[in-house]
Length: 131
Image (cartoon, rainbow, N blue to C red; front, side, top):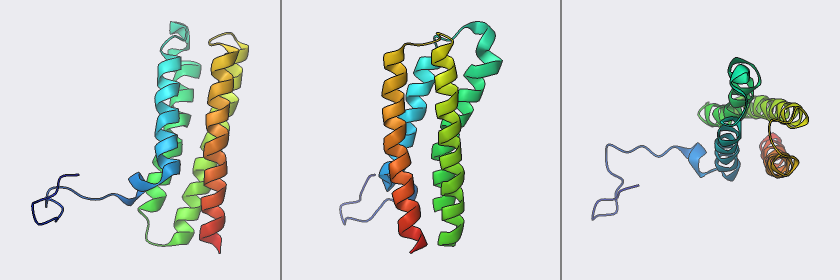
């Protein structure tokens, strides 16, 4: 973020609160990793597992962002639940892809670990907002 000499944020820049959330940053990393892994999937899966897996992974960060942009904390919680559902969908698709031999077991384990971190952070954020 650029700042003027007076310490003010430049008028053409907007601060988006969701970008400061660790869980959102982790979800972006997950989506990038999914894109990298699916680059090597068979071409015949482009409109099957590749597309669905990418959409599910992207949906996690998008729902966090959309929820953070809502007016009421209850709406944010609802979007966090949707993000968590997308995370579970991503996990199911990753497992299927791994079991079909589209990527290594180590790659699956690494993404599963990253997903577990995101899941814990989503649950923590949901619980803190519900109080």
